[in-house]
Structures are given as C-alpha cells and as structure tokens.
Length: 396
Ligand code: SF4
Image (cartoon, rainbow, N blue to C red; front, top):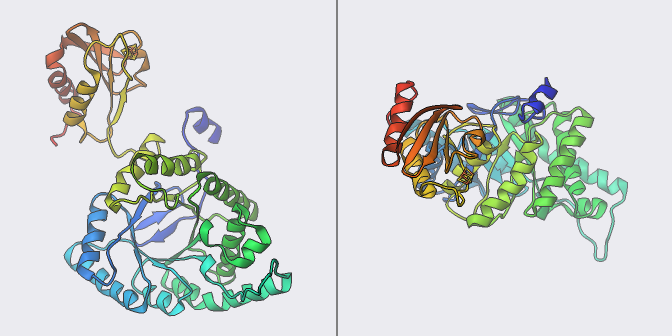
C-alpha cells in the first residue's frame, strides 16, 4: 500500500495516535491541522475573544493563548464562555511559559490543551565553573520534575485533555545542555524525559514539538524524534514549526523550508508558521504549504507556465483574471499556458486549461481534450461557461 502511494507521488504519513483537542483531532491520519496564536493580552477579554474569532474564521483550527499569570488563567474561563455565547466553542491551547504549576492547573480547566516547555522546569543550581552533571544528579532532578508535573498530568488525563511537550532549541535545561550539548539530540532527550513521566502516569494525549529558529537544526530534531519514537514504539503526533522565522517573503520561505521538508517525509500532524506579522497572515501560508504538498486541498490549484518568447498573450494578466474569476471554486485544478507547444502536455492533468493557440486566439481544454477555440478577449468568460456547462460552477 505504501509503495503504491509513493509510486503515485503521494506522501506517506508516519502513523500516529489521534489526540483530541476539543472538536479537532491531531494525528491518527487526520488532515494536518493548522494553528496559530493570538497576540492580544489574555487579560483583555474582549480583545482576546475577537482575536481568537478572527483567526478561527479564516481557518485557524486551534488557537493558542499565552498564560503568564494566575489572573490570565482565570481570564481564560471568561474568554471561553464568551466565545461559546457569542460565536462558538474554539479549540484552545494555553501556553504556560514557566514552571508555574498553579497557573497550569487552573488553566487546564478552561482549555483543551496545555503547552509546557521542558526547558523551563529547571531545578539545577548551577555551580560556578560546572560543566557536567553526574548520572545521580541527573536522575534526582528528573524525579523532582516528575513530582512537580504530576498534578498537571493527572488533571489533564482525568479531564481527557491534551498536553504539548514543546521543546525549544533556545531554552534547553542546563543539565541537558551539559549532557547532550546544544544539539538536536539534547532536544529529543528533553522531550523523551517528559514523555516518560507522562507514560508512567498513564497519560498519552501528547503532542510533541521541537522548534528551532535554524531550519537544519529543527529538521534534524524532528527527524531524530520521529526515528526515536518509532524505535521506542511511541506514536505521538508532532507539531511542526520554525521559531522566530521573521517576516515577509524570507519568513515565509524559511518556515516553508523547515515545515515542508518534514511533511514531505511524512513527519508532522499539525503546523504553525510563526511570522513577525499579524497572526492572520500565517494561516494562508499554512494552507498553501499543505496544498502544495497535496496534503490538503482548500483552494483552486493553478498550474501556469512561466511564459517565454513563445507566449501568445499577457500571461500574468490572464492568470490574474482567471484567478479572480475562479478562486472560489475549491477542488478544481486550472491551467493557464502561454502556448500550445508544451502547453497541453504540461498542464499536469488539470481539470481545465486556457492555452494560447494562435495570436489573438486561445484554446480551452477539459483535461487533455481541446473543447473550443475562442478569441482571446472572450477567454475568461468562455472558460466560466465551460465550467458551468459541466455543472462544476458555483457562484462566489
Ligand atoms: Fe513558453 Fe509555451 Fe512553455 Fe509557456 S507553455 S513557457 S509559452 S513554451
């Protein structure tokens, strides 16, 4: 089955367990989930509700909020209630940024998932000039972490909620740094230590992330994690992201380089693109990555040639017009090709094709079949007529 899928050019995803986050499921073969985070202050209830709603309405399936204090944790109760009354219930995740167990325990009542960062559960007392931890010290600290974490794990377990063990390259605990170095391995070991604690307490609603701002580090960490988990018989889903990717074109390319490299190898069940821009800007990037990889289809797939000396019309302008007219037709593939020479053969099995034929004339295709030739100035209109005649048109 796998070989067939690969032969067909389909990504074979790593098998993972399903983890429910409210009404959304991460892993277990479910579509890769898109998430982001609001940047409003959680204490500003109206602002936070509006931010969550704005993100959810444009396709953010799980929304994260930051919870730096107990007051923020209490605010989540109100945020959730307001969402239910004025909009709908939205799967929520609380980011608890430090070893604040009271905060985590309170917020666990009001959200579907709590994200913790193992690097912030620090019990080491660094001695000056110290460069290593003995095995005994290492394990003693591990025990302390377990004691600290236990109430949260038990609470989430008993409520049927989830936890993300979110390791960050930039904040590894000192004893991990000394033992494994500032490496992907240190990140993997840090996550595994927390997974084991959860497993000992019979809690397996876990999602794991190992983010870094350097793409090669992030890719290596997730690949190692997937491999280690497979070897250990662990099937936890992975949350992918490149931290501090920046903004603009490079921020998008950097995020895509990391996230898509892993997804293409079947690794990853949920993604977040972190941009230094309004969080709403992250969502289309997520969906574009998933669409380009064939993992989710949420928009029209346009196939268009880059144009060259043979191009018979203004390709950029026509592509723009075709897109404006058809972008709401989710599920279709539409090709716009400059000429007949390579055109039809390279339309990548698009459902419809708009192809330059002779100067001033274009051909419309259904699949590989030429349906009609029309003057270029009627091209878009006739394309719409063809889609309508096939009953595949819906009004925008
Ligand atoms: Fe050039 Fe025709 Fe190829 Fe477009 S399809 S790049 S116009 S040869």
